Length: 472
Length: 67
Image (tube, helix red, strand yellow):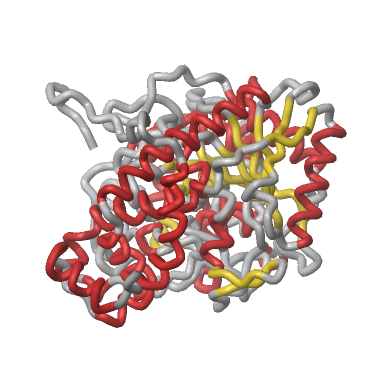
């Protein structure tokens, strides 16, 4: 099989071919590494590439499969990790100058779990500095390219994970999501991004942005691939006391059923206010497509959801400042200007405002959970606008001009507050050829229903036959 | 009501938080805070009297591991 065909295989397809020994882990890993070598000076998706290490691991996995020991669908699959996920003996920069030479002594739990499942680490992926921003613009390592447009933001903060997966520079990746940082780049780069339930996937060994809002999740080219990665990641971890002892189902088995009779709620408040017209049309069309598949789509109300914006602001500002304060006292000049300014804002949030936000969180979460007792999932746009230009600071939609960071996070950050699982799936292209995503929000710990809905929708999505023009 | 100013924020940062700041960085903080203050005040519209804050679970001290 030609190298560019290998890098177009989904994880599920490649895994099956490795199991059947029709392709080898070394062949697949080399195809990705050669593609990275040829393209990454332009795409800037990677901060660190691990060529020799990846080939050595792939050779070991190849021997295993030849000896009849097949670990499962991630055996020999080349992946990338966002560069704030700790990797033993491999530098972990967090996209910053401050940690440019930091070499952790241990792997994050999520890295350990993927390696145990047989994944091959190609390298560490670019991000918005310390994950604090939804644009992906990075002053230290360059900005990862969005393969749908040379001048377009990849979205952030998991910019390299989004751009790299979309451009075929890894079979899949992990990102982290504090206000939308998995789902936003997934939407802007035309891939699938899953923020699991808070407590479903360990955060141990992942450099925090805001402890009570941070999530780790898969970014892939298909919904099935997201399920495969989640299967390896999910489950309680004694090293992360916020993980829950909730049984982990067989996600792929759960995707086998159809979606007839599932109830999908549309929330007009917040999520459908002021949308780019192409985004609105694509998401409305996605709702009709789900109806066509037999789901029951109905309008539901979340009158308190607007409070999520201020609550997330207070929590993310205070928690991120608390974590970064030691660096800000001694090495402030080494931060990029935008992240330094955002961090400094955190010291002006009052303790009472922070606690009020954590109390408001209970109210908003109870409201969302209440609605999700009436319906199986909510459907919203992932972002109200498609990928802005990299140099764009503000955007105007329906006559309202606002900071692009506000636009990009409007639909995603409330779900970090509530902790529900949320899946972004591509649903079409704008007239300018930029991807659009829908966000499906599920009940706590019910990623399985989201994956079932997402996969059913993916099969009929108008996006399904499109590939990014810069992916070659 | 007194408007937020860079000078006020600089005093808070340096006197209360003891974080040295470059005043040039505070223009962004002023703008960001001003855009959120109404929303933060509106959290009072929620009936929070009997609501405890959501907190991260802390393991008992005898558990020898943690983040």
